[in-house]
Length: 407
Image 1: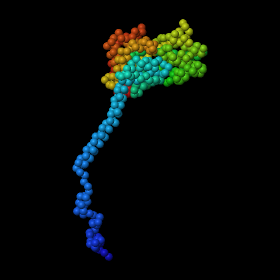
Image 2: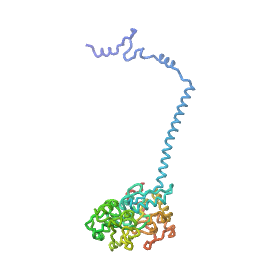
Image 3: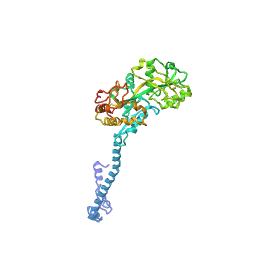
């Protein structure tokens, strides 16, 4: 039996080479391990590049590097230019949320774009919407919306319903616009508002100004109809077919929608008397033959009530980019207001008194500053019942609401 010592001696025993010699274990044979002298010979046998060619190669690599860098910059430059163009375009763009396609709000917003767009510093984008309550929500929360046209009773309504916490500090107004009339168009068998209790009355979409006013109006008068929320176009067709009893539409007269109704249909407007319960919120008004010749006989006007339209704005913090954008719009609107009084602008512009105040609302600071700088000489002729201009409450430094200072 071999001892451990013998085993170790066997492991270190020299191996026999091809030539009959020996070499230790762990060393490569000479035919696989060139000697230092042989390695030097191999290196000396390899061709060496001339010094000039080596310098040219280094120069070529540098040229390629610089060319690549220039190509990269050339590719980046259009992206940078595009970024600058995007910034410049958005800096002068103001989104104005208005109303439905058949209403006055969208016409007013289109007039704002037609008069105020200058192609450079200011661009106005009219946006169709579902009505006053939705417009307040869009002003509060929707990016890209700076201004909205709403009914003057909407702020009291959203406060009462507690829909938007902090709305008093988050919403201001640039100006009161005009009065919008409440239109109640009914079947021929419906003679009075009281007859609508228990019957289907369309009030436009949920959250619309018409739906809000209908709720307030019928509630104050003690009338309890069944409300439907079809679009006004659909509602008018249903009314013609007798599927509903009436439809309520709050819109500045004359409303283009009712131009599609002829006298043979038997449809007619219901009178809305200014009851004491309505006098605190609404103003008396009339619909007459001049606005709706097919629906109202000459010399037989229909009494109704009206609610004010307001150009509302988010209470951006003074000095912020969004504040400066809305301030630029406000100055342009006031400076060019006389252009809105000329054809082909909507006739409702001629009812606007820029100095009129709205109870319960705060004026946008730039609008108040403009009025104080220019006085009454630049303000359109005021209606007899318009309130004079006066100091407005100062807006808080930071408005509470959904958007804060975000774009």
